[in-house]
Length: 196
Image 1 (tube, rainbow, N blue to C red):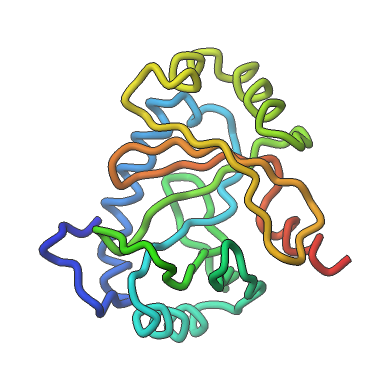
Image 2 (tube, rainbow, N blue to C red):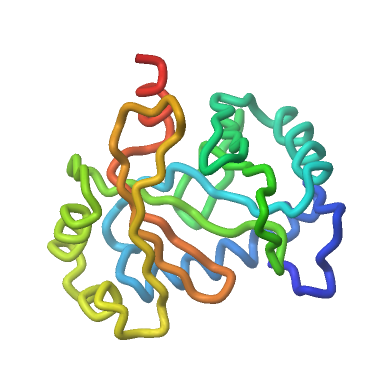
């Protein structure tokens, strides 16, 4: 992860590669603390935060040399690209097959770079309430976290792209500049639903 003094309009692919080990370890530690590490969940993608369209364009070019864009969708008024990597990146023992590259919206992020990962909790939940129940069945120690009684911020949402047909409720666990999101369907399944 970058410090604020390192933030610039030129977030590069090389800088992201340098950030990856530190980000990976911080995410793995956060997963363990939340009790999500022992569930054997798929990590369907990692996501970036970029403050300029120029920076996003540059990263788009770089990642397209590493894979291909499988989705270019507008969510909450801004383009979000999903890039399937030719060679997955590793997060501990987890395989990251896709990168989410959102173009900037109105919000300016204090730190650009890696921001979150998304984990798939199979079970077909269609609401955040059902997803919460399913998660608590697997990790009862999350009761206080989900009740917002700890320093971990929890946000429940049902984001949807303009062509998506599949409900994919999401629970986001956030602390400082790290975020882990849990949802019932992987990104490739969601993208496939757009084509129906």
